[in-house]
Amino acid sequence: MLTGMEHLLKNYDALGTSDKITIAIGFVSIIIGIIAAIAGALFGSLSAYYLARNQQKRDLEDKRYSALVATQYALLYQRRTLDDMYSAHLEKCEKHPMRYIEMPSNIIIVPHFAVPLSDITFIAEANKPSKTADVLQKIHIAEENFLVLVESFKIVMREKETVLNDERLILGFDESTDQYLMANNPAGFVKLKEATNLLYAQYKVSVPPIEEAIRLLGLYIQERFPRRLALGVALPDGTTLYGAKPL
View (cartoon, rainbow, N blue to C red):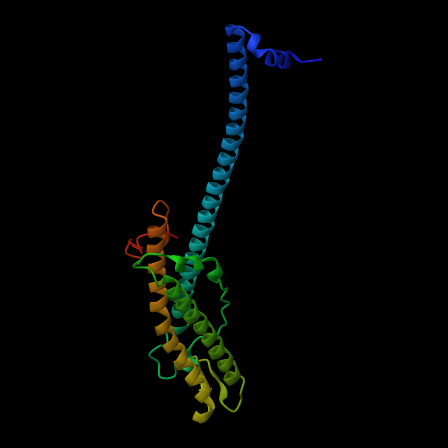
């Protein structure tokens, strides 16, 4: 048994003009339907691909921006820790000839908000010159200086505790003058004096790098993400450090 279409094709030459036109229109309709189906499937696939790709790019940019802000927060926290350390321990007796003994000996806990360095290595991928091109190196140097300073502080506190518990060096405490009674044994205080001097020196070399890193990072964020805000530090005079949003 022949189908209707097969019958028409077999007897095509015997058909009239109107039948031939009908057959032609039928074939064209079939071809158009096939092409439309293929085009629709292809368009849908391409649309899904580009949407997914754009979403991945947005997610990556969001992740990178978050990593930069986390880095800013870590550096700003470290800078604030330096201020707290200086005001609580270093400032009062900085000029005192016996500052190694006069420095407050209470231990402070310094939580360390580490810079997520592995998450911001993309900074080095910049393919054009930039005024913030070396910001990654500056950040690393700043954090290393901070960590050295914290360790120096811990060493001073340990050495001072050792000295204060040594009866050969500390004879007692005069409450009337609020001072320790020290034995005449300069050699016994050498390690503490050297550690204290190194602590003050390390503080002085730690502040400029961390301030420079914060400044450059703020500029980098504004350069890379001009429509987003970077963190900043509100100064006592009412201005904002590094021209960013106050923390």
